[in-house]
Amino acid sequence: MKLKHMLWLAAILIIPANVWAYGEGVGSGSGTGMCKKVGFSEFSPINNAEVSPQSAFSFYASESTFPKSIKVTIKGQSVPVTVVEKQNGYKVTGKLPDGLRGAFAKINIEARGIAQCEVTDGWLVKVTQ
Image (cartoon, rainbow, N blue to C red; front, side, top):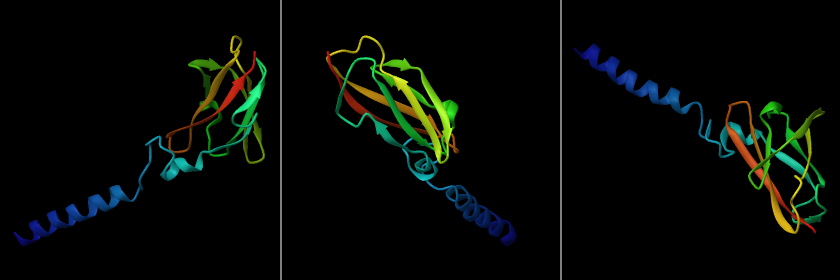
Protein backbone atom coordinates (compact mmCIF):
# COMPACT_ATOMS: atom_id res chain seq x y z
CA MET A 1 0.00 0.00 0.00
CA LYS A 2 2.81 2.40 0.87
CA LEU A 3 4.54 1.69 -2.45
CA LYS A 4 1.37 2.62 -4.37
CA HIS A 5 1.11 5.97 -2.51
CA MET A 6 4.80 6.70 -3.09
CA LEU A 7 4.42 6.05 -6.84
CA TRP A 8 1.43 8.40 -7.05
CA LEU A 9 3.35 11.09 -5.16
CA ALA A 10 6.36 10.68 -7.45
CA ALA A 11 4.15 10.97 -10.55
CA ILE A 12 2.46 14.11 -9.22
CA LEU A 13 5.82 15.75 -8.53
CA ILE A 14 7.55 14.71 -11.79
CA ILE A 15 4.86 15.60 -14.36
CA PRO A 16 4.52 19.33 -13.53
CA ALA A 17 8.33 19.72 -13.54
CA ASN A 18 8.48 18.34 -17.09
CA VAL A 19 5.68 20.61 -18.27
CA TRP A 20 7.31 23.73 -16.78
CA ALA A 21 10.69 22.82 -18.28
CA TYR A 22 9.56 24.13 -21.66
CA GLY A 23 9.35 27.68 -20.33
CA GLU A 24 6.74 30.32 -20.72
CA GLY A 25 5.63 31.86 -23.97
CA VAL A 26 6.08 28.91 -26.29
CA GLY A 27 3.39 29.33 -28.91
CA SER A 28 1.98 32.40 -27.20
CA GLY A 29 2.51 34.81 -30.08
CA SER A 30 3.52 37.51 -27.64
CA GLY A 31 7.22 37.67 -28.43
CA THR A 32 8.27 36.07 -25.14
CA GLY A 33 10.19 32.88 -24.38
CA MET A 34 11.47 31.25 -27.57
CA CYS A 35 9.49 33.73 -29.67
CA LYS A 36 11.68 36.64 -28.65
CA LYS A 37 14.42 35.31 -30.94
CA VAL A 38 12.25 36.39 -33.88
CA GLY A 39 12.71 40.08 -34.43
CA PHE A 40 12.44 42.84 -36.99
CA SER A 41 14.79 45.80 -37.43
CA GLU A 42 16.13 48.50 -39.75
CA PHE A 43 12.70 49.72 -40.85
CA SER A 44 12.86 51.95 -43.93
CA PRO A 45 11.48 54.54 -44.27
CA ILE A 46 11.76 55.39 -40.58
CA ASN A 47 8.72 55.49 -38.30
CA ASN A 48 6.38 58.46 -38.97
CA ALA A 49 8.26 59.47 -42.16
CA GLU A 50 6.42 61.25 -44.95
CA VAL A 51 6.52 59.19 -48.14
CA SER A 52 5.09 59.47 -51.62
CA PRO A 53 2.40 57.05 -52.85
CA GLN A 54 3.67 53.59 -53.90
CA SER A 55 6.99 54.15 -52.10
CA ALA A 56 9.27 51.23 -51.40
CA PHE A 57 9.74 49.96 -47.85
CA SER A 58 12.08 47.43 -46.29
CA PHE A 59 13.06 45.80 -43.02
CA TYR A 60 15.19 42.95 -41.74
CA ALA A 61 13.88 39.78 -40.09
CA SER A 62 16.12 37.79 -37.76
CA GLU A 63 17.60 34.47 -38.87
CA SER A 64 15.27 32.50 -36.58
CA THR A 65 12.30 33.66 -38.71
CA PHE A 66 10.80 31.25 -41.22
CA PRO A 67 11.04 33.35 -44.42
CA LYS A 68 7.93 31.87 -46.06
CA SER A 69 5.86 32.86 -43.03
CA ILE A 70 6.54 36.61 -43.39
CA LYS A 71 3.36 38.50 -44.24
CA VAL A 72 2.85 42.24 -44.61
CA THR A 73 -0.49 44.02 -44.55
CA ILE A 74 -1.32 47.69 -44.89
CA LYS A 75 -4.84 48.88 -44.00
CA GLY A 76 -6.03 45.27 -44.12
CA GLN A 77 -4.65 44.71 -47.61
CA SER A 78 -2.03 41.98 -48.16
CA VAL A 79 1.13 43.40 -49.72
CA PRO A 80 3.47 41.28 -51.88
CA VAL A 81 7.02 41.24 -50.54
CA THR A 82 10.40 39.93 -51.66
CA VAL A 83 12.45 38.07 -49.05
CA VAL A 84 16.20 37.74 -49.64
CA GLU A 85 18.50 35.78 -47.35
CA LYS A 86 21.29 37.91 -45.89
CA GLN A 87 24.20 37.19 -43.56
CA ASN A 88 22.25 37.44 -40.27
CA GLY A 89 18.67 37.04 -41.40
CA TYR A 90 16.40 38.17 -44.20
CA LYS A 91 15.89 41.48 -45.99
CA VAL A 92 12.22 42.05 -46.82
CA THR A 93 11.19 44.63 -49.44
CA GLY A 94 7.87 45.77 -50.85
CA LYS A 95 5.90 48.78 -52.09
CA LEU A 96 2.96 50.65 -50.60
CA PRO A 97 -0.26 49.65 -52.36
CA ASP A 98 -1.82 51.90 -54.98
CA GLY A 99 -4.58 54.14 -53.67
CA LEU A 100 -2.93 55.21 -50.41
CA ARG A 101 -2.80 59.00 -50.53
CA GLY A 102 -3.00 61.72 -47.90
CA ALA A 103 -3.25 59.32 -44.96
CA PHE A 104 -1.27 57.52 -42.31
CA ALA A 105 -0.63 53.86 -43.00
CA LYS A 106 0.71 51.22 -40.65
CA ILE A 107 2.95 48.61 -42.21
CA ASN A 108 2.02 45.47 -40.24
CA ILE A 109 4.43 42.53 -40.13
CA GLU A 110 3.54 39.01 -39.08
CA ALA A 111 5.89 36.01 -39.04
CA ARG A 112 6.56 32.68 -37.36
CA GLY A 113 9.73 31.38 -35.83
CA ILE A 114 11.34 28.17 -34.63
CA ALA A 115 8.67 27.36 -32.03
CA GLN A 116 5.90 28.14 -34.58
CA CYS A 117 4.87 31.10 -32.45
CA GLU A 118 3.56 34.16 -34.23
CA VAL A 119 5.35 37.47 -33.74
CA THR A 120 3.97 40.79 -34.95
CA ASP A 121 5.47 44.25 -35.38
CA GLY A 122 5.15 47.25 -37.64
CA TRP A 123 5.61 50.95 -38.11
CA LEU A 124 3.70 54.00 -39.29
CA VAL A 125 4.26 56.17 -42.38
CA LYS A 126 2.43 59.23 -43.64
CA VAL A 127 1.58 58.99 -47.34
CA THR A 128 1.48 62.37 -49.10
CA GLN A 129 -0.95 63.44 -51.81
